[in-house]
Length: 102
Image 1: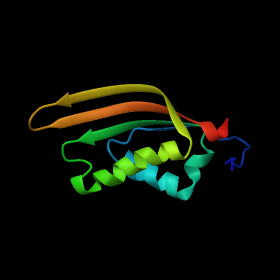
Image 2 (image 1 turned 30 degrees about the vertical axis):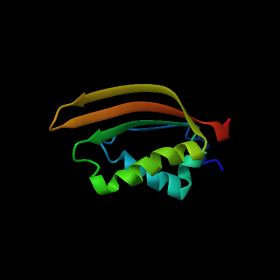
Image 3 (image 1 turned 180 degrees about the vertical axis):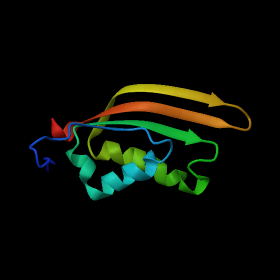
């Protein structure tokens, strides 16, 4: 399945940096099948002390692993971690290649 815009252009790279909401949006893109037509997916994953809420962390983990199941393999990762006893900031810029599209 390939998404072609009305002017004949195809989406080749989708980049997302939406400060924690990437978990829900990525899950929606996976559920809808849209992401399967994207050759490269670049996302900045975020984990904060209070976001996503603890009860949603299993959903975020499942979303992360579903990318692999869909054929996405990471080829570049830059991570940042800052933590203290009261706060946690983890983020990683990850570039994925959709191996089912090559």
